[in-house]
Image (cartoon, rainbow, N blue to C red; front, side):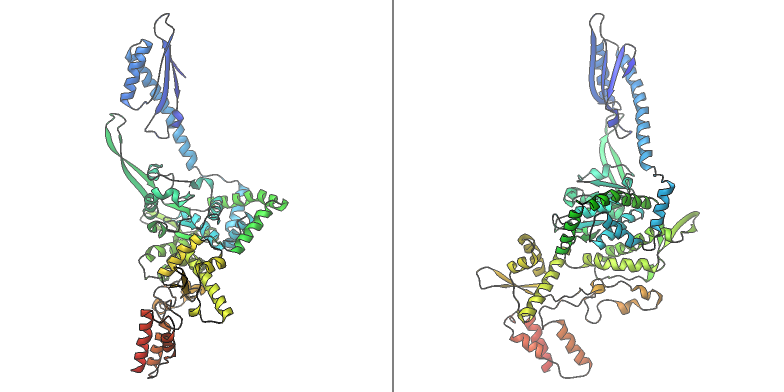
Length: 588
């Protein structure tokens, strides 16, 4: 309430103004209009910075209170100056509090430093996740934690957690976010298309932006892609000039970099967004479900209650530790000797993810290494160096997470393929038949994997399109039978993602070309043998013929090709022509 002469001004809504460019308030003025006529009043809601609505309030209030317009105009000028000072003080105070680093006590600081100096820091992080009730998902937890650390780098990682409903993707994201200081993370359930453009200029800088469901950010996917790749958002928008009321172009900018984390149940995610992110898939196996059930039951016991009480201590320790991490530059002295698969253009982004993963590991271990400095153009640059163990850890993680993103199949489809391979191998062993002679229906797969029929339709369709499955029309009306062409290629540990240098070779002079993919019958860029179209017919037979020719022999073993021609399904054109060509070559 502000009193000016016999006039009283009640003002509401000042705190709702989040910007210094607007001062929209509700103003109620009361006074005595004429002697003996009682109290007069006028109320309106308007922006004090807008000349036209301010003039309209002045004219109407002067009429209601029976005073000159100059009196009300003068009152509003005094009120504007007073409210402007209060608003500036409030907003600048909020910004200072937001940007202020939390000061740690001596005890908290020492405990955090002991954690950061632990020689087995990564193993310690995994154990602390389990102490907080997150079982399994060892690689996902560690990659998520490192991605959170990467927010302090100039080009952070981005994470997409992909799984079916109720598999635990949100629990994994919440667990990772819980280890990050509250002031350095922002979480939303949904984002509108333009919302990111109008955030504070530095509200997201070097922070984690988490969105619960990718679907809730579908309209903002363009802004997310730009924020991840460019590290900055800029938009030109039309708005009113506060002085004249005329329309003019205003520019809004949001500074990065930002570490983005999303979860999704969608099978088909925006490809442009997906190739900017590291994809993590939740373990949906029976053993993991059993472990989750066990931890859920344990939470109801006395030991579970005590563990819950200690959970906050673990989280506070890690948050304090991350507060002590400095945003240093990372120098990789082995950078020019590192190798990566290069057969597809999208690996240009995946290679950057791999290098950032190495940088995040090095940054996390900064308190175990000497922080170095170099003078350059009058500035002092402080940095920490990568050591071979960082590269070794990154290679191990890359085989599991980046390997899946480089694969030609989506993660869930690859998971189904692995289950099918194991099941078909066992059934062929029990039935004592060749793999190529084994047929199965979708119902058989549903019974074996316990997957829903809807998911199987989608993922089996993908496998058929990519020629991992061969579809046959069965003798029962319009039903289909499947033959598994895939035979386990690319699932032998490190060969799943080829092109990464062996850490043991960093001190040797071995040539990259000697380790490149595409040699010895491997599929270019992946290190995996080419998937043979059928058992007994494929690149293996052709390689055998090449080997015989290299020895100077005029005899080629044609039994495999003859067997292929005698098969009931050998009428398939490409396979039959391949076998016939080899027989003709042998005859020559």
